Length: 226
Length: 186
Image (tube, rainbow over all chains, first blue to last red; front, side):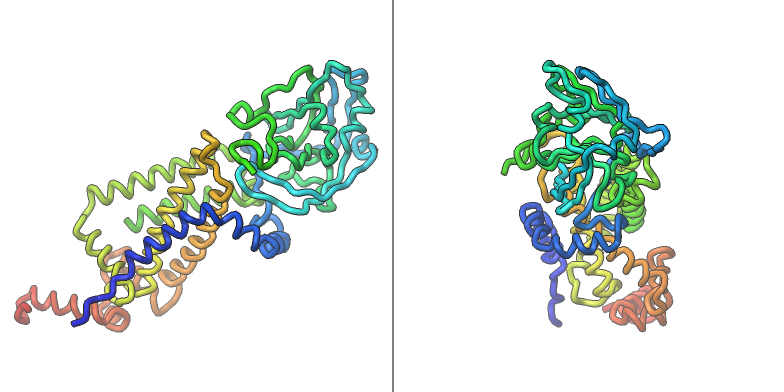
């Protein structure tokens, strides 16, 4: 009688070895297939975020945006503190850009179309004092906050966005306004923004308090090196 | 082993999807709680599997392992069931490694790799497809759904076994005949 063929153990080991080795090549493979997966993701909206967004919250629930009560308070070390409502924010000079969004956990969304306000126009409005070196951004999602230096906020592609991909920011993406800085990982882009405070030195934000880098440059921080 | 794995898989899949899919993440909320449920279920699952191996019927486990090794032979399990079991076991190892890296990478950035989340996601997609197929064959498909009796009650009809797992059924029948003294032992 023939000996039974024993392929099971080998198959198990091949799958495990292939899976472990994919930690080295999965990102490259994903980039090859990303045109396909991104298209699929856009087709099915936010149900299956293949090649698309993953939404993270720290408090367990996403803040609700009520245009009647929402205000963006801008104060601290400035000449003219202001409190903007949604209409006043939208009335400021509009800027648009298409940029790539990188999450520190490893996923990326290409070609995100943002619209909003450049920080230089907010600066013109409130006139920061010379002693202001950084801006602290507070979210409606308490206790989330983070910060940028004044110089970082004035980088060419940094904005306070109120639209994404041709529509007002949705609740998962931080309605009504969020910080966008494509050069840094997403945790610096505070969502559900409610307050900007100019401060003399850069404070430690929520994720920085948990060990993440203050300057979250894509590919050059948080253990990544390009 | 089957039920430990199955129950943990359902909880891990549910909590994982609530963390992963934006629509569910928004509807359910409570991300920290779901994250705790996901992590502690994974720990409980791994501990329970170790307990089954250490405290359970090792001979039966070894017998099943040998049976799975002969993946191209039909026996008590058919080829599809064996392939599913082998993939599920391999994925369990990979889920554990990538899950640990995701957890530990939050604490030590040297262990955060760009591909970890991707691999964890891909495993979830393939596992979900396998799980749906497994449920369909075990619960809905007329030709195979009787096998559910085998895993829930420990027996299947003789006629069904002879029709679907002939070699194994004939061996079992012969052994029971021998045990009853109706035929000489070989």
